[in-house]
Length: 301
Ligand code: NDP
Image 1 (cartoon, rainbow, N blue to C red):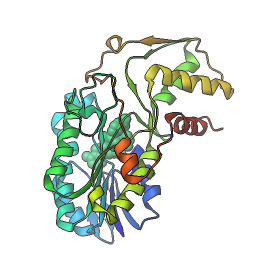
Image 2: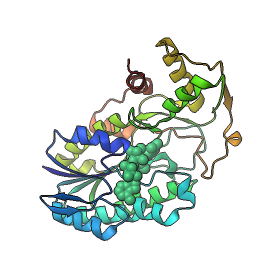
Image 3: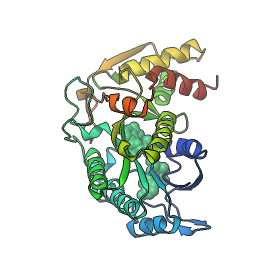
C-alpha cells in the first residue's frame, strides 16, 4: 500500500510517520518541495495546483492530511491563507482522492461547535464555529464530504506532543520562575496526545479500507475531562513529585473573560467519542495516562 502523508513535521504528522510506517510505503511531505522517485513533490497546501500535481504523481491508496493552518489567533486576520490551507486544500485532496478511489484521512476540531453548554458534543450536533479558524476547519469538512470521496475526519481538541511546545511545558517553565500563576478554569476539554491521534487514525483507516461503510466524521479524544487550570495543577504536582525545583506556590483559577484573545475560545470542548469506540471497537484511555507519559518524557524521567 502507498500512503501520502502531508504535514509530516507537525505534532500529529510526526507521530503518523511512525504509526503509518507499518502499513506500507509512506511518502511524507512538509511544505517544502521534495525530489523523489515520483518527481519533485510539493507538499505546500497553499499551492493548490502543486498539491493536485503531487497526488497525481504519487497515486496513493490513502492520503493522510496532518497539515493545517493552526495559528488560531493569527487566522482572525490572516484569513485568505488560513482558508486556503484549511478549506480549499482539503477540497483538492478530496477531489483527487475521489479520482483515485483513495481514502482521505483528515483532522478537524471541536471549534466547529459554538462551545456552549456542558454536554459532550456528538457528531450530529449543530455546528456553529465561534472563530475564523473554526469556520475554515468546518468548511474543509464540508468540502470533503461534498465530493463523495472515501474519508475519515477526526475532530479532536487540545492536542499536545512531547516534541515542540505545549501547554503543560509552558506551565512548568513558568512554575520554575513565578510564585503565582493565573490559569483559565472555565474552559473544559480533554488534552489529546498526538500519538493517540496517529495510532487511532492508523487503526481506523485499516478497518475502513476493508469496510468503506465506516467512512465518516468521528470525535476523537481521550476519556475524562479537565479545565486548563486543573490540567496545570496536574502537570505541576506531577513535576514536583518527580523532584523538579518549582517556585510556584499558588495557581489561581481565572475566567476566560480575564484572558482576552483575538479569537474567541469555546468553554465547552467536550467530545462524545461513543461512535468511534463502537464502530471501530476501540478503547480510549483517560487523558491522565497520555499526559503522564508526555511529562515523563519532557522531564527526562
Ligand atoms: P501543528 O501546528 O503541530 O502542525 C501543523 C502542520 O501543518 C505543521 O507542520 C505546519 O508546517 C503544517 N502547515 C501549515 N501550513 C502549511 C502549508 N501551507 N503547507 C504545508 N504544511 C503546512 O498542528 P497539529 O499537529 O496539532 O494539528 C493536526 C491537526 O489537528 C490539524 O488538522 C489541526 O487543525 C487539528 N487540531 C489541532 C488542535 C491543537 O490543539 N493543535 C486541536 C484540534 C484539532 P510548518 O511547521 O512548516 O508551519
